[in-house]
Every structure is written in structure tokens, then in C-alpha cells.
Length: 161
Image (cartoon, rainbow, N blue to C red; front, side, top):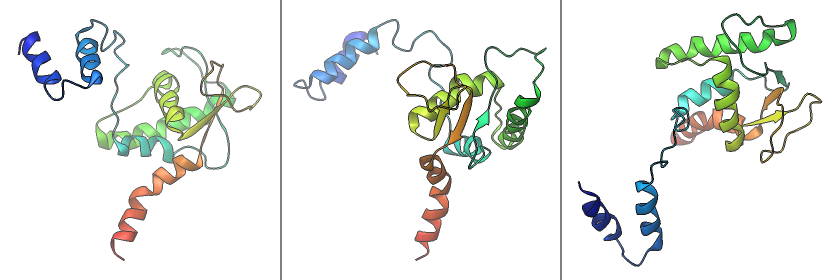
């Protein structure tokens, strides 16, 4: 499809809608998808449920900070986070997936916080505002995250009634 054909088909849906004109111009931009390879991850609900179900229900989980490389040695206080990652990766095998320490903290936790499934905390265990940058040190599943874990069970239970 040529650029002109694309424009005609898209804007032809409803020429009065400015949003279609915006979309046409936005898609043509070189930076539409961004250059960062991790920007457009897609996770299934099952993947997210695996990540959430292993978080402690009533406690904060301390995690590592900074960049983690192959020679990184987890401190005693970081051991629970290391065990958390191991449990998740065992479950993710069923989805042909895995996650690294940095991927969890820098990508998945960020997105789960934006979705309201987890809260993140600073070193003083103070809840961090989602719209500001912090040095995060702890995570905790929220009620919304717990509700998400139960969605399928609730649906199946209500389906039978």
C-alpha cells in the first residue's frame, strides 16, 4: 500500500475526524515506534498473573537497585527477591518465557505500577508517586492486583450460577 492509499483509506473512514488526520501523520513519523526495543512489550494476562501471584500479600518485597550483571552477588537482604525471580521463572517456563532481575524492576514493575497492580516504595518505605522519579527499593501488590488474580476464578464461579 502506498502512502497516498494509506492516507485515503484511513482518513476516508470519516474525513471530519481530526483524530484520523493526527493518526496518519503520527504513523508516518520515523520515531512512531521509538528506538528502544523494550518499549512495546506485550504480556498475556497469564504472564502478569504469574508475576503478581508470587509477590508477598502483606509485606513489602525489597529488590535490587542499579544494573545487575552476571557477576552480581545478591546481599542477604536481597535473597528474597532472588527467590521471587526464581519462582516466577519456573512458572514462566510454561509460557516459553523468562525475566531477568533488571527486566522485572525496570520494565515490568514500572508497567504494573502504572496499571495499579503494585505500589512501589523508596528506601524509607514511603509510597512513591507514580508521576515522579525515585530510587525505588520495595514493591507490594495492591488490592487491584489481588483482584486481577481472582478475575478468572470469579468469572468461572459466576458462570455456573
